[in-house]
Structures are given as C-alpha cells and as structure tokens.
Length: 167
Length: 216
View (cartoon, chains in turn brown, cyan):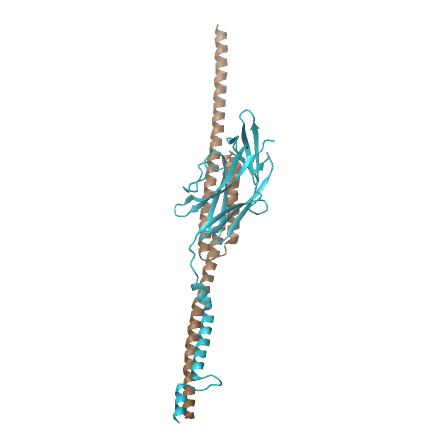
C-alpha cells in the first residue's frame, strides 16, 4: 500500500514538474515572440516617423526651388523598404520586418542634412536669380527709359540750336 | 522768312524723317529696348496663377496603352500592368497606394460619397512625387487559387505582386451566373499624407481591373 502511494506520488510529481517546465518554456516562448513583435512594431513606427521627417525636409527644399529628383529616388527606395517591412510584419515574419525597417532608416541616415544643403543652395540661387532677373532687369529697363529721355532732350536741344542757327 | 520759322518750330528735317517722325521713332526704339531688358522680370511677373490642383492616377496595359488589360486569369501565371501617378498639386506629395481585392458582393470605393472601400489592404505602395512630376511602377502579379466544385467558388491562397507574397486565404469568389465567370476586382486606392493632420487621408482616386478567374 505504501509502495503504491509512493509510486502515485512519484508519478504525480513527475507530471507536475513536466507541466511546470513546459509552462515556463511555453510562456518564455510567447514572451520572446511578443517582445520581437513589439520590437518590430517599434522599429517600423520609427522608420515611418523618419520618412515623414525626411518628406518634410524635401518639401521645404522643393518650396524654395531645389532640385529634389535625387532625394525623391532615395525617399522612394526607403518607402519601398518600409512597405515590405509592414508586409513582413503582417505575415508574422518579425525578424525580417525589423531588418527591412532598419534598412529603410539607414537609407535616410544623412538625408535631412542633404536636403538642408540643397535647400540652402537653392535659396541662395533663388536670391541671385531674383536680384539679376527681376531687380536687375527692372533697373535696366528704367535705365534705358531714363537714358533715352536724356538722349532725346540732348538731341532736341542740339537740333533746336541748329534750327535757330539756321534761322 | 515766316515759312522758314514755321518749319523750324514744327520740326526739323533729319535725313528723310521729320522731327515728329523722328520723335516717334526714338520713343518706339526706347520702348522696345526697355521691354527687351525688362523681359526676364516680366516673364516672372506676368504668369497666370495655377488654379487647378489635382492628382492623376492611372493604370495601363502591358504595352503602356489603355488597352489589352488582363481579364481571363490563369492560376500562377504572371500578368503585367503599369500603375502611374501624376502630381499637379503644386507641391511635392507623399502618396500611399493601397492594393485591395474584392469580389462582387464586397464594397468598392464610392466615387459619389468620395469614400474608400472598407476592405483591408493587401499591400501598401509608397510613392513620393515632385510637383508636375510623374511616377510609374510596373506591376507584375499572379494569383494562386483553387476551384471548389462543391461550393462552386474560387478560394484564394495568395497573390504575388512584384515578388511580394500576399496572403489571400480569406478571399473567395462565388460563381456569377449573369457574367458566367468568377469575377474578382483588383483595385488601387490613392491616399495622401496630410501635413495638417500628420496622417493619411483618402485622396478620392481609385483605379482597378476586373478579372475572370479561369478554372481550367
């Protein structure tokens, strides 16, 4: 009887131990998966934010007339990587999603600085374009009109003198 | 004497031109010269302001024409179309194209209410387009599906769009007796980033293609 009880106790102990171990394993597995999912979500959100920041920088550069063709190529590449990262996330491939989202961020690492440089150059070019083509040409036109008027007065005076001499 | 005086007051002769003619000629030449010098400024100032701001959104067949669109679809066979955006908004725009699929009973984007379809998107395509610029993407796609004879419906497994595998396990198409086919609609909705709300809003544009999923 005592042996029988011992065997039952031993079997129960082994089962409960197995249950405990498997519980820890499964819980740990779920925790790990959840943490990867969270990490992937965070990295994707970061990449999205980065793209918006870069888009704003490009918009600012575009507004002052900078040539943004090259920047848009990079931005479209980063956008494509982000789209694929989101798809991988949706399909549950979180490691791949993280990798793609990081690649997207890497593409844009020095993007804002480049956009700012282009913006600065475009602003300067715009200033000189305004000074030469708008201010310069208006001043030139005014100078031509004034010069013409002065020349006309001079010629008129000269010819009226010639006329009075002729009289 | 009087005649000579009159001549001197009214004008003097300069070659073949009278004083008045010379005066007019001088003014015209000065005016033309002034306009010529002012032309760079005038070209910037006398520009009609843009009044229409919009986005073009199109889909073209494999020959880059608005014809020969794929219709009869075979399982796992590649088909090609071109998806394009033309930006006439006056600023560089950030677009997202939502790729969606529906059968005949599911909601499509509503052009009267200007609302998007409530269906979930299979994939999002990001596009940044400069003002007055165009963006075009060649799309190659194929469908993996099976025909269920008992239910008389086509059940999808997946769709491949430019090497991206999209899950379509919840998608089915029932037999359409009116059109004698399993008709599915692949459509693209255009969304735009709104800087004021820091989010995307439906840009009231969508294009799509109807397909007949052949079972042979």
